[in-house]
Amino acid sequence: MRAVIIGAGIAGLSAALRLRKLGWQTLLVEKAPSRRGGGYGVTFGGIGYDGAENLGILSALRDKEFVTSELVYRKVDGRRRFAMNGATIAATMGEKSFGILRGDIESVLYEAVRDHAEFRFGTTVTAIDQDDDTVYATLSDGSIEAADLLIGADGLHSATRALVFGPEDGYRLDLDHKVAVFMLKNRPAELREGETGSISEGGRTFAMMSVGDGRTSAFFGYRTDVDGADTDEGPETVLPRLYGDMAWLVPQALAELKTADSVYFDSISQMVVDRWSHGRVVLLGDAAWCVTLFAGYGSSLAVGGADLLGSAIERHPGDIPAALAEWETQLRPETERKQKMGRRVKGVYAPRNKFVLELTQLPLRLASSAPVRRYMQRKLQVQGLRNPWVYSSISARNADFDASSMKDTSTAFFASEATPSTSRSSSRTATAYSLLRSVPNIGGSSLLIVTVTPAATISRIGCSSSDSTARVARLDVGHTSSGMSLSARCRSSFSS
Image (cartoon, rainbow, N blue to C red):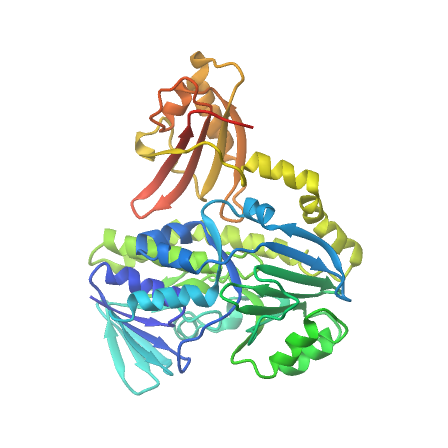
């Protein structure tokens, strides 16, 4: 079996790696003349975490992760307003999430698949035809490539989508913002290793991020209804005009913009596509859904979506349309939730009104205060784990409840009653599960604190401990290639 993949970014590389596991041959066609690096930092997790694990690249990705030790919010003149420390930031991310540079995800994927796939850089697709058995891609180098499947993983402005599904204007939902991202040559002395600094004012946001190994990324994001922003001019002209009044490291970033190796500059738009496949052609990643950086889940969806696509093909050997239909049914609810979240965030991202800005940053201010920070660290146990965890896993089909309706990766802390009552364990298990199902599907992970009976109930959700002093169980719920899985974590004692 053979696939032609248009686009050698995160989605395309993930698809090639997943199909290789099925014994497929792949050709990746990339418009750029060579591989790109850099980009911006992302939080990688959710179905992307599970997908990376299944693809065998999770360890390599974790080797590339960076840890933000402090997030500092500054005034326009550069003065410090407030900050969140690394422990508080970690508490908001969840265990199965980590920070990584987008370009590093591509690098790990490329190294994993480079010797097992054919690459053609500086090449585009110009025509696509298909019949019941084969799809044919005409490329800009004059060749016509025949395949069993064509995957359009060519991003927001997908040529594949335009050729097969129709013009971009029919699917693009503009969120009225633009963004520019590039890598600096060196980390400024004023930015400590591991620090991220941010300024928001008047519908504009600037951030500079230390992203590991001495590397630094500059980020500009602004509303297109800001005076002077609604223009087709390039970043070298627009950004100095819009950000010329900002101090701190903004002048240095604007100076380096002129000599940056590569600058990503585009509108923030979603792709709302009513169907992702047509015959033997399927869209993947931003070409299909583009949740935008407002939702912060694009890289995870690309990796996780590619993994799920391969699993669907594996379940339907010889029936590509059936595999594509099943895959879309499985994944679409997740992408639509993330798109809705992105549209909600649009309203509070870089607000022009100072009062609205203060309101949106109030929860962050509270989290940065010492009393709240200590409370979060104690409750979420991001510091000082003094007791070892005992791990075990169970499948959903063997559990006392049906987890098939859980869509997102969720994390629940099941805390015991002060006085055990094993006679009520069954009802409390059901109650805990009902509450778990109600956790909002936001950000790829959710937190829930409920009360259940210890020991007996803990054993019912998968921990093998028979110790009557067992006080705490942690239950992770997520997707795997074979369906839903539950991973329970117990420990025999608890210290508050």
